[in-house]
Length: 249
Length: 218
Ligand code: HEM
Ligand code: FES
Image 1 (cartoon, chains in turn red, cyan):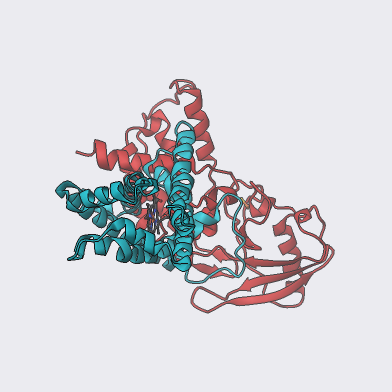
Image 2 (cartoon, chains in turn purple, red):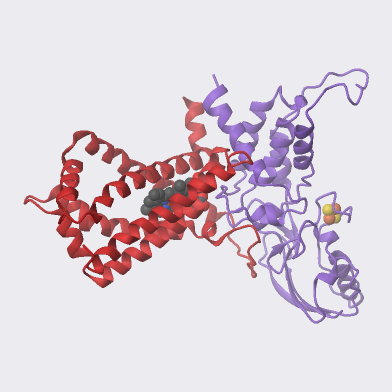
C-alpha cells in the first residue's frame, strides 16, 4: 500500500506546530498503524531528518501509551482497538490520512504526536489508597462477590487510561476515564471503605486539571479501545450525588 | 455548607442543576400544553379566555411563574457557563472532526438549539405574555392568538421553534437522567418512552396550534 500522510509536527510544547505531508510506500496491509509510522521514521532517519515522535510501549493494546487522532477518530476508524492494534487494511491504497495528537488543554503536546497525560495520573493519585488487610496472601475466593458486580467491575477495570475519551469528546471531558476508575472500585467489597472520599476527590481533581464537563454526547464510548460503557458515567454521577446529597454528614 | 457550595461548583453539581431545571421546564410544558388545548374548542375562545384570566390572576400561579422564570434563568446561565468552559478545553482544534457513531447531532448542538429557543421565548413572551400581564386594557387572549397566527411568517417561525424544542429535548430529556445517574438498563425503556412524549408528541401538539389558526379551522 502507498499512502500520503499529513502529520502534525511540533518541536515542543512552547513552539507552534503544523502539518507536514509525507508519503510512505509498500506498506503491508497487515502492518499496524505504529509499524507504518516506524517505516516512515526509518525513511526519515535515513534521509537525516528528525523522526516523528509518538508514544507506544506494549503494542498489544494493554498499556494505554499509544494514542493518535487518525482522520478525526481517536485510535482511528476501527472500533474497540488502540492505535497499536489498528491494521493498515482498514485503509485503502492511495489514501490520504491526517495524523494529529490528542488535543485538550490538560494534555499539552510534548512533541509531535506525544502528549502529556500525567493529568490522568494525578486524578488516579487523588483517589487515594484502598484499605486492605496485610499479612498472608488471602485465598482468591475468600471474599464472595456477586457475579454481575464482578463482571461490571472488570469491564470498568479494562480501561487502559489512554485518553481517547478526552480526545474524542467535544468538551474534552475525562468523565469516561474517571467513571471507569470510580466504578471499578465502587462495585467491589474491597473498595467500600474509601468509596465516598474516592469519588469526591477524583471528581474535584478532574475539574481542577481543567477537563470539560460531560454533556452526554456519548462520543467517548464509540472511541474507547476497551469499549467502556457510558453507564459508568451514570454510576460515577450516582456515587457523587449519593455522597453529596445523602450520606454526607 | 461549604461542602454544599463546593458540590454546586463541581461540573457534576452544575450539570445536576442544569438537568433539574431542564426537567422543571419540561413539567411546565405539560401544564402549558394542557391549558392551550382549550384553543381547539369551537366556542369562540370563551373557555380559553377564562383559563387565561385565571392564570393571570391566581396568586399561586403568579408565584410559580416566578419560580419558572428563575428556573429558566438558572438553566440558561449554567448552559452558557458550561459551554464557555468547555470551549476553553480545546484551544487548538482538530483538522479533521469525524464525529462518532454513538454521538447524536442533537447532543452536539444543544447549546445552539437552546440559544435559538431563547430567541423564540423572548418573541413568544412579547406576543402573548406581556399583553396578558401588563396591559392596562382588557385583552382577549384568544383573539390575540388568532391574530398572531394569521401571519404565515409568525406561524412558520413557531413551527421551526417547536421543531428545535423537540430537538433540544430529544437529547436533553434522557441526558438529564444520565446526569442524575439513573439512565441504566432498568430505567432506560421508561426514560425513552416518556422522553418520546416530551420531544415528539408535545412539540407536535403545540405545532398543531399555529396550523389550526393559520388554516382558519377555529
Ligand atoms: C431558552 C434557552 C435554553 C438554553 C440556552 C438551553 C441550553 C441548554 C444547554 C446548553 C444544555 C446542556 C446540554 C448538554 O449538557 O449538552 C441544556 C440541557 C437541557 N435543556 Fe435546555 N436550554 C434552553 C431551554 C430549554 C427549555 C425551554 C427546556 C425544556 C422545556 C430545556 C430542557 C433541557 C433539558 C431537560 C436538558 C438536559 C439537562 C442535562 O443534560 O442534564 N431547555 N439546555
Ligand atoms: S502501545 Fe500499549 S496500548 Fe498501544
